[in-house]
Amino acid sequence: DAGVTQSPTHLIKTRGQQVTLRCSPKSGHDTVSWYQQALGQGPQFIFQYYEEEERQRGNFPDRFSGHQFPNYSSELNVNALLLGDSALYLCASSFDIEQFFGPGTRLTVL
Amino acid sequence: GEDVEQSLFLSVREGDSSVINCTYTDSSSTYLYWYKQEPGAGLQLLTYIFSNMDMKQDQRLTVLLNKKDKHLSLRIADTQTGDSAIYFCAETLYGAGSYQLTFGKGTKLSVIP
Image (cartoon, rainbow over all chains, first blue to last red; front, top):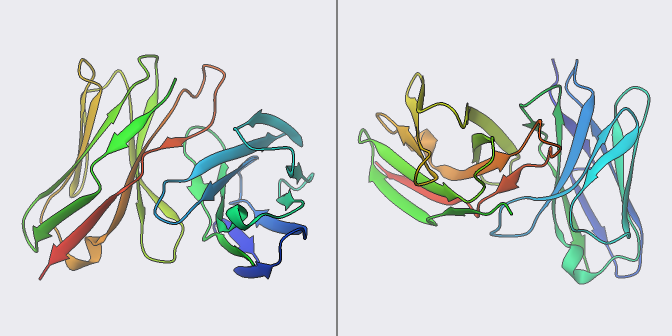
C-alpha cells in the first residue's frame, strides 16, 4: 500500500497565478481532506470531499476550490495567489475516524 | 467553538519519559488525536482516544484524558532521539456533523542524547 501520495512535492508561483495540487488517497479510503500549514503553525482545515461533493468547508475564501474524482483522488485549486498562500498543503484520506496524511506540497508564492 | 492549546517546547534526556500536554474546549462527544511531524514531512497518526475513555496505551505511548478539565496528555516512555519531532494534538466532532480536525500549534520535543 503506497499510502497517501501528493504531487508535486514543491512548487514556486508568482502572485496572481493559479495552482493545482493533487492527492491520491490510501487504498480503501473514500474521503479526502485538505489542510494548509503555515510555517510554525498547526494545520488549518480547508475542506473535505466525500462522494465527489464538498462535505464541509473551513474558513477559507472562494479562491480555494477542489474536486474529487470517481477514483477518490482529489485536486485543490487556488486562484489569484497571494504571498500569504505560501505554506505546506497537506492532503489526508480516511474511511472513518482516522485521517492519514500525505507528505504535503510546499507552495512558495513570490 | 473548538480550540486546542499546547505548550510549544519540551526538552528531555534520552531514556526518560516525555509528557506532552494539550487542552481543548469543546465539551461535545469528540475524538482526540496525537500526530507526529518530522522536519519536512507530513503528519503521522500516533494514536487517538474517544472522549468517553480515560486512558489508552499502545506500546511506549500512553494517552490520558481528564474530561472534567478537558486536558489530554501523551506520555512517551523511554524516549529516544528518533522521537524528536513536533507533536500535534487535534480534535474532531466526527459523527456530530463535523469532520474537520482542529489542531493545536504543536509541541516541539527535543531529545538530548
